[in-house]
Length: 311
Image: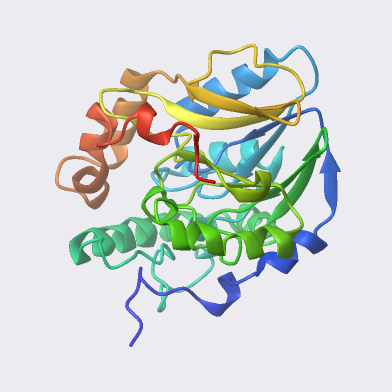
């Protein structure tokens, strides 16, 4: 029997070939922001970053831009502003029109995530779904979003997904799985099927960048709207461009003349915690699951996330 929050619905399984078939958008500067999680202050900071680019910058939200924004004003603000840019579905958005069936939150959590965490995520999503139901105009727009996107920056072919090459909620680009050589070797077929040089994702909520065989790259921004490293208070966004970043980079690499960087999204931490607590006080599912991460970051470091060659 499928357990809500652990199952991966068939409709999530787009396959790598869908990326090969997607219309390609060309740009000189591309920002990829997965996992905004309803953080309006992080959205403010991110839009300010793109505005400071010396030339046009394209911004794509690769899913889960909703999560903590269960207040009506926050839900409208996030979705109205996000939908002014490119966006693809995350599991959070994909499950908003549902009635809370087998998929639950749609996270497809692996076995190493405990049942209590899964159940809290289902409860968070159920509350978000109640809010979303009061905004049918936004739900209709979210329902039109694609599962994948395709870009070209310079000569670099980019497949943008929420989870992995095959599924909206896939975990193939999780840092732990990328540490397994056999798993990495198996990804070559996914790059070939998608006809890309780089996959950009976010679903696993921890950032990582790895250089694989045949010049392939996987970069996962983790979360644009939550801390990603121990002792920090900023989100992370992926920037891919033909010119160097005007902002400080946490780490990055140059691939065929294209700059691939992870940038910090430095939002107003105090204001965001106030907004979060107004919706999710102590004892609530989101507070139990996420408040410690928001205050002190997860057990993860920039060194662990930074590019390493796995050839």
